[in-house]
Image (cartoon, rainbow, N blue to C red; front, top):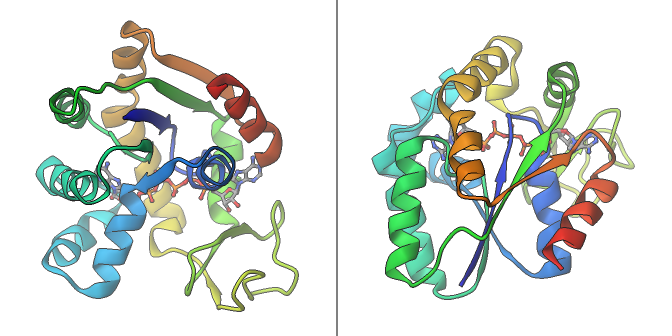
Length: 213
Ligand code: AP5
């Protein structure tokens, strides 16, 4: 089993990079944000519980997240995993270590995506997502060929509910308060690699792929 983590502020580009790395290096992409949005859309008990935290830009409780991740790992089994947006608290990181240790595995590499805060706010405010297939665009940086329409499936593009300005500022605050401590956690373990993610998605993904060998 091989495990890498994409760590970075909201809007740093984790999902965008994950898609590229998944397609080239064949990792299973595990995004807790995507899993939660699917649960909210399906109206499952997990989705109903998570919705109010997500809309406020707060973190969903650790127990809910760990249940989702463990179910996912149990379903997919041994393999190459790329976590995006997980772990987000010290408790999640410790629990992930325990889950991996039971499978004889460990966290192999953590990519810290470095992007200045003003760039991040611009990325989030221009983000558009396909309602049908989940493909991610940006009105200026990565525009679709036809405004409002997904290049891949023709689905309608929309703005995420938690991408409004007030929620974004809280998400950044929550990141600094509850998640940024993981930089130190993984640095001490010697697995943290800092990546300049202010370049284009292709240049950043290529730098990551080179480090993955
Ligand atoms: P989640 O979906 O994980 O959101 P996030 O971490 O806030 O990250 P984002 O999805 O906003 O951004 P991203 O880094 O993936 O950037 P993207 O590639 O889209 O979580 C949502 C919520 O769920 C949380 O607030 C929380 O409530 C809950 N949650 C999830 N996981 C949890 C956990 N583990 N514990 C507790 N709660 C949890 O890019 C952003 C934009 O920039 C796009 O428009 C893109 O096109 C553009 N862009 C990307 N890269 C570039 C580039 N290099 N150059 C130019 N533009 C770019």
